[in-house]
Image (cartoon, rainbow, N blue to C red; front, side, top):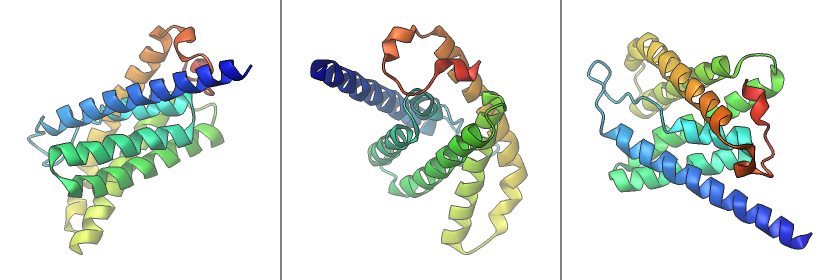
Length: 182
């Protein structure tokens, strides 16, 4: 029994390491893709891996993936201010997403992903405005919300398709239920 627990814990750590590494790669690749009409905006594909961690393992594990991804991504990109924006927004978005999944279990995961993406963008705006002392950037809010909705829908669909495509035995022992996203 103890070997089984150790093996399960080892699989979980390996899976979370893989999700963190893939999230980091996506995070770094996204930072290289300029969005011409919204400076500083990103597509949000790194969030695929933290959402997978949340659905497969739970909120603490998703937060760990978010922390590893944003901390290392900010270090590797050489932009530590990115850490403040991405980590704050990532944690707020994960908490909000988990709250929605818990409080409204009948709402589609796609809608939850869209809401999480919009919250992510709004929190980043608040952080920026708090640091600069100006609310002028809120002019971007409608555009960021539209982009966030589109990115959240894409991320949500990718997560749903990924969970459907993965063999169940790969994540044996995961606390989340793959069927919840159907």
